[in-house]
Each structure stands twice: as C-alpha cells, then as structure tokens.
Image 1 (cartoon, rainbow, N blue to C red):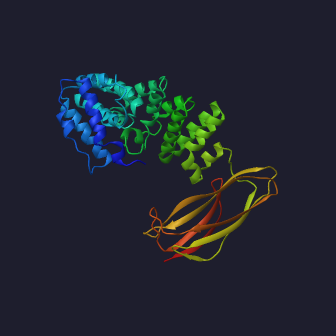
Image 2: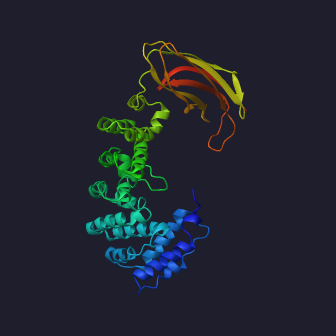
Image 3: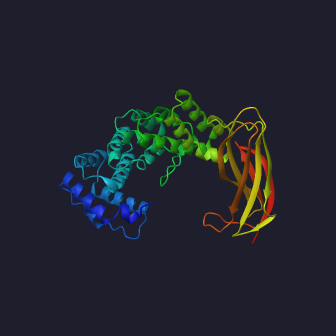
Length: 365
C-alpha cells in the first residue's frame, strides 16, 4: 500500500491548481495554493484539498461542475488529484439539495472515474438517497467504459475499504443484487474482481443472500470465469466452512468419510511454541469424495469464552477406500494480529464444513 505522501502530496496539489487555472482562468485558487499536507493522513489530505477547492469555487453545483467539465478536456487532469475533486462534486451537490444537482453529480462522477476512481465520492450520495441513485447506477452496468461499470459495483460495496459505510446498503444487503447480476459475466476481469469482492462483503452480513446470488450465476453459466468469480466471492464463507457455499462448489456433506483423530503431540503448549496434530481420513463410500479439509483453533478470549479461527489444510479428491493422513503443526508464536489468553483451547478438524473430530488442550504462558 503506497504511503499517503506518495498518493496525495504537494506536487499533486500544484498539478491540480494548474488544471483548475486552465479551466477557470479568472479564479485565483488562493485556498488551494495555501494547502499544506505534511503530517496528514490520506483522508485528512483529501478533505483539506476538497475544502480548499470548494472555498475557491463558491456558488452552486452548476458552477463547480462547469469548471470540472472544462478541466476534463485536459488529459493531465488525472490521478490522485481526482479524489478530492470528486468529493467536492458530491459535497456541493448535496449542499444544493436539489434532485437536478444530485443526478448531475452522479453523471459527473461517472465521467471522473476513468481518471482515478469515484468509488469513495459516490458514497455520500448513496447515503443521502439510495433509491434515487440506484437506477442510474444500474444503468452504468451497460456503459462502454469498464471503469464506469466497475464504479457501479465497487462504489456500492457494503464494506468498501477506506470508505464510509452506507447505512441503507448495510441495512438492505440484497439491494445491490441487480447490479451484481448484471456484471458477474462482464468481459472485464477488472469488473469481475470488483463483483467478487462485493459478493464477499455481502457474505459477511447475509451468507444466504451471497450464496443465492452465486447459485444464480452458476446456473446461468458454469464457465471457468464464473466459477473463479464465485470461488473468490465466497472465500470468507468457504474458509468458515459454510455448507451452502461449499455445496455450490461441489463439496457436499462428507457422507462416507470417517476420521480418526485429531491426536495432539502434547496436552499443552506454551505461547511462542508449536502444537502438532495428526489424524486419518478414510473414504468408506462407493464414489470419489471432493473434500475441503480445514482445522479450527478455538482460542480462549479474555472473558473465558472461545472464538474459532479456521485454517486451511488441503483440498483433495479421495477415492473409495483411500486414506489421507493429516500431519501438521500449529504455531502459537506472538503476532500483532492476535492476543493469546492462557487457558483451555481446542483444535477441531472440519471437512466440507462439518466437524469430524475435536481435541482439547491447554495454552500456557
């Protein structure tokens, strides 16, 4: 991830001043010239440049849009300077408060997004009136530009990184389904990846909505691209062992699969050390079994309860009568993303989302 100063810095602001002066030669852009970004985070930098631009271009939304549209005639008006400009457009449109400005701002964001992205600037508009915005966003799914089509998916993601949450979207997880339905077979991998990430966002709040959408797409086209998109879009559910998600990908209930174990290398392990475990899977059925094998560590929390964390072991086709030996160690080394709490823990083997064996152990200081 680039640093904030590598994305939006004083040099970018100088370029923005040049673009704005060329588009509005009668404006001094004194506030933009006075912006200093040192020591600020990316969001603070964006806000500072946005606010300076709004101060330099007082008036209503049409006046601001007129300047931005003229700036778009210059190809050098692109890159990170676009982010605060797009934010200024949505802010001024909402300040105006009229439906004309609202609709015009959406059109302007579609024009700006190929120069960087407008996925962040669209969020305040969606938050203000999702039902008014959605028909236009849905129309973008057939736009000739892959950037505009991606904006339809990426801008409406429930959990878009770096972005504000849109309450109406998080409260209605299926509301963006028509957008994803329209784009899941897009010719652009750039767009399809956005659809997959959007689907993954949906899956975190409403797994059944995500699984239903993926099922529709696989039913329409079971091609390789669709299968890849679904696998990526359901990655969180797959890791969690969600039966519906696994079934869509051909990993049904593990009928005929038996498991001996898990056998732990020791009844306890100290923080910083490793715990080994083994076990044997057998296919006692009459046909090959598609298996996703995971192990789950049930970590003790500070309040004494436990929380599961799923780790991948293997994906395998196990023929009738065949065995699969599991042999793995799990590290309890100290990492920044997890706090270990000594006390009772457990390790569980999960096959196609179904628990086949569990063993308790003690985590020591």
